[in-house]
Length: 164
Image (tube, rainbow, N blue to C red):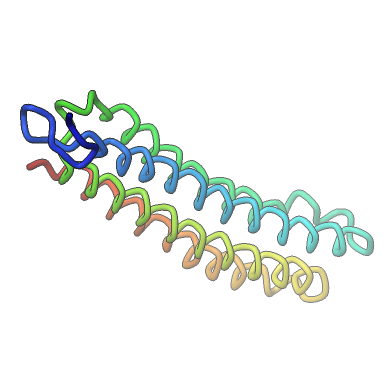
């Protein structure tokens, strides 16, 4: 009688793909959470600002767009990992762990970037409504927040390409 912990005939454990699936799920879940927070937080700032300065609404959408890009990073990695998932007989435990690491890298960095974009976007659009010269500074800070998610994407793609 074979147990769950016994490897398949070619040496790969049956639970190997679980880690790959968790990597794909982590990539999209955490990056989407960051994007959602960034969108919601920036959106409340835009709504509050637009009461007094409705002409600035379109100019103030930039943080919302940047937050949405964070989710795309997670989507790309999740699709890459999901496309590489194979039958448990061919999927090694090493590969599962690498895919989990890639998903967590892009997911958590996307979560952090989304939080930063949301907070900066909220304060930035409110401040820009009062002092238009703040706009360039807000954009620069948003770029630095966005690049945190990009760093996670780069690490995730680098990990994804590792094969044993």
